[in-house]
Length: 283
Ligand code: SF4
Ligand code: MG
Picture 1 (cartoon, rainbow, N blue to C red):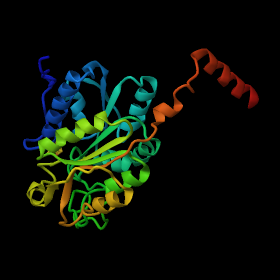
Picture 2: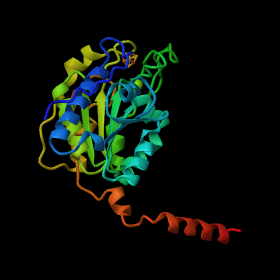
Picture 3: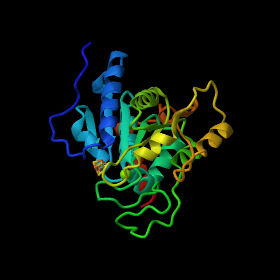
């Protein structure tokens, strides 16, 4: 089977050096791999939010839904529940998923919905020219915080572990090998897969020199205990200069939301009847 190009003719407006290019090529490679392994491209749906990352819906030639800010997961939930045969992948930004859409992220993990969420975490609002986000470091000087933010960042991996995500990974846009591996593993995992990707924003928060000195690849684990994973996750708190582990942090088998509600679906006709009954009761 020949590799599909999968890059559209749309004019690309990402800045030179933007980490989104790595994510675009990693996704393209993984989709091609999956097609060879039996998941046809026609069965893949990409959902994006709003932000620089979201242009992925324009640039990748796959089925896609350009959602609104922070709302990739509700859209993905609807798609997955209506069509469980589809493979649903969300690309969201850090401002998008960790601020505006945080409740959806938590509920997606809590339900263990069988979707993949990839966060383009550049730790800044790039599209709106450089405001701080929930993962910007303490003291970050941006458009809205010229004196430096006085808030500590959240650790999204910690949040996802405690919320119930069954696959957790961290990538970096300058390590394509790990990025491809994580995206593929996450998509193949049955359940809520979460990959936080340290994405370089070349224009508003270019910290690649710092990341380059701090990142290392995690060793593969046979078993994952919650406590050990939490300890590892807390090694770096999105602040400071502790080592930053790249790779798979956590993986667990658990029933998914879509499996749990399978069989509880009702026909169109029955749904009308139930609605009428509820209306009658409350008249
Ligand atoms: Fe990429 Fe930052 Fe430019 Fe947005 S502003 S396209 S994230 S480099
Ligand atoms: Mg961002």
